[in-house]
Length: 126
Length: 229
Image 1 (cartoon, each protein chain N blue to C red):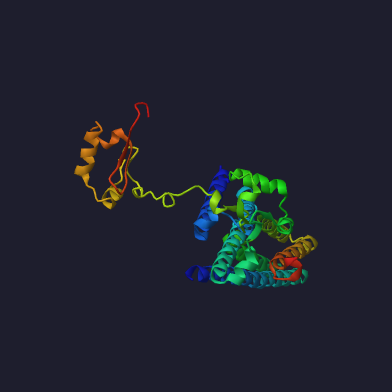
Image 2: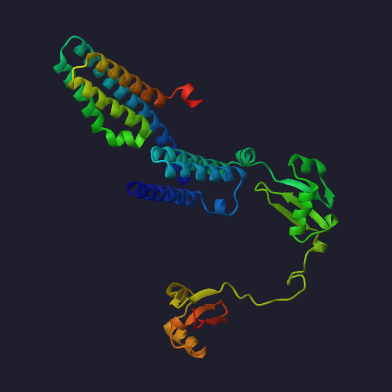
């Protein structure tokens, strides 16, 4: 009887853990995407300091969760986002508005993909 | 160097996980796998191999499916223990292939067992004549149990009216030079008894003994260690 409950508990933990991770990913990526879009608007308006602050904030949040992200996601997706963030920082330093905007768009798309890959949808299951 | 260490640690984790999992499933699964359990064992092996080799994949991508499979197998095993109906649904029923020497061709076909395979199985069990079989049953594990007619069975001591002594289980008291203290106590002997046995067989120390066993009747089996071992 004990083994039955252990097995059931394990299944529940795995399923609910997966769901919690999926929700967290959605929330986290939306938050970062929001900040990146805001940074783009700031850069478009010529407010580079504000754009820099927002981009740094995204990078800091990304680095702070690096271990968790590496435990939970395919490393090549994370590496792509990491290098794109570094690229955006470079464009920001040179105040290259168009390249910066393009880089931020790519980042938002990559974050969206990350979130979609983790969502509990029929498309992902099939 | 780092990749080597990662491979080592990942392999260690996955190996331990599988060992713990298989241990949790119980002894029965190790010895005689049901078809579905065999499938689980094969899938687990494959699941473990991928994150062991590809470091770009998180370890959890291997661990979570393995844990899920183990939990499901455990759950189904426990449910089939509790419910006969569920057990039948999951594992099927044993099929009577031969009854009173008569071959059930429909059952053979239903189990996709050819006559050649049946004859091979029977020969492996020392039976060549179908007419000597009372029952041949294809178990859910895929093994064939053959029950010959009573007249075809070898006679037992009881049938022959003999009362042989019951020797019981022999316990190992010395194994490769090491004294098994627990077994010695269990058998009700002490160090003095052991020393006496060693002297009787012409050795001075347990280190010179390869194997020493004693059954419930006190009969001792002694094998000295060979010189070059």
